Length: 137
Ligand SMILES: [Zn+2]
Image (cartoon, rainbow, N blue to C red; front, side):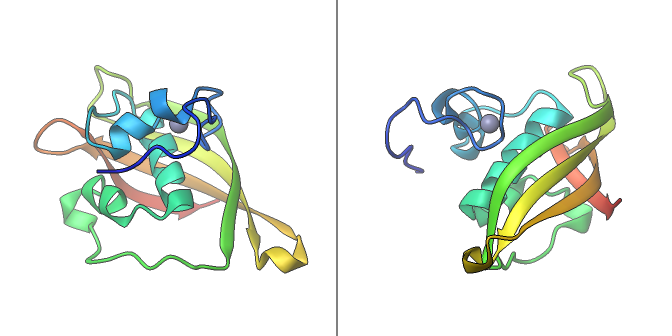
């Protein structure tokens, strides 16, 4: 069981503008499942920021799922911006999202870096969205 720390008004790290409690938390906590590929993308970004390995593994399509995830403790994820998306809607079986994620390595340097990626999503056997793979842009 995850805790939703601090106030319930904490805005979600995915940048939706919603409170975490009403945004990605229910997905992380297993209360509900993302309805779109973009929602899964956002919730996985937040899971990286919060180092929620179980959620990242669960939402990784079984065929490509790694055994474990190592987090780089020097990385702080600071911002997610969705650039474009194709399909990935409620009625779709697959889709992709391109995004930029900004992060800092070694906070003492205060240097902001940018990761651009195209992530591909599909449905698992339970029809839930899962992450297939990503390519750096
Ligand atoms: Zn969110």
